[in-house]
Image 1 (cartoon, rainbow, N blue to C red):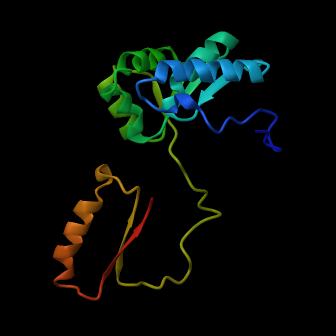
Image 2 (image 1 turned 90 degrees about the vertical axis):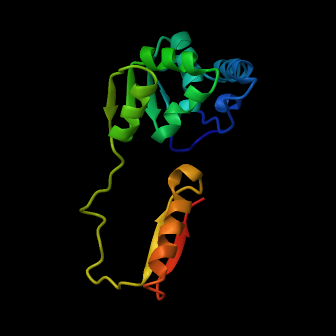
Length: 178
């Protein structure tokens, strides 16, 4: 797939994205597919999500490019629960740079692997462009924003809201997430 705004190919479906039984074969498949469809004239391979870090490592070595890995949340430690833990540890150690979206994520990765040189670049907002409206209309509701996964604490939030609701029946509980 080509992106009109970028001079590189976009590969939306990578089979190596999973940590399943066939990951090694999937990484090899994606590697061959990318090697055949690209010039390989790259200075940097940037693995934007951890599941493709193994593929990024292989490609950066083939192309003589630097490898950067983006550590997005605690998914970066999920390989610890798979048979790929050692391989991810090696890839993290050998990467030119590791960039985490939070200090907490960087800490968790270092706890599970070993001390690594991880830079934190938080997700931010330009407050000169975005800010609260001048008039705020307060409405009686609690808003939960997050993925609908157990580790995000939705059940705990609902339980806490249930306790609060007894004294404040006018409030609603709203959820935004997927």
